[in-house]
Amino acid sequence: MRKLAVLLSGSGRTLDNFHERITAGSLRAEIQVVLSNVADALGLSKAKRYGYPAFHAKSDEEINRILADYEVDLITLAGYLKLYRPPEKLRQAVLNIHPALIPSFCGAGYYGHHVHEAVKARGCTVSGCTVHFANESYDEGPIVLQRCVALMDSDTPDEIATRVFAVECEAFPEAINLVDEKGVEYFWNRVKP
Image (cartoon, rainbow, N blue to C red; front, side, top):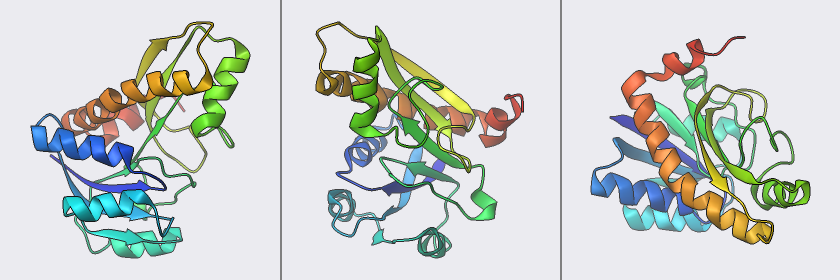
């Protein structure tokens, strides 16, 4: 069972998903702490309502000081909109979800609605999400899993976002369970440098 820290910047929809799946027994994890770089993030209020320790922390240093007080073996970036530098002992244990099929539509500036607008503008017939380990560059760490959704020409960026988020809700917990089953090192070792 993975012991999670959840980092978020917004509404906490992914936190909701994790909480529901942990409660239902389909996600093999325990949330130890929730942190946000945004003081009034709705996700922090939700975390407190669920009974999780929840903190506002503006910098990586503040986040890492707080994490030191908790038993965490996997940090999840759940709509966290900053490049994060973890403590050394968790350097390879930061899991992110990206709302596109990496290596397309990723890197600096490609987050949230920007991704779906770019997918629409390019006329893509599929999109999806990628769960990957984070490193010191945006969206470049080892991929854990990807899920695809078919698109229609008439889809708006909002409709694409809705469809992609639905598969994100399945993919992120599935990826955490895979990491729990195979171990963090498995994913870093299977990628060619």
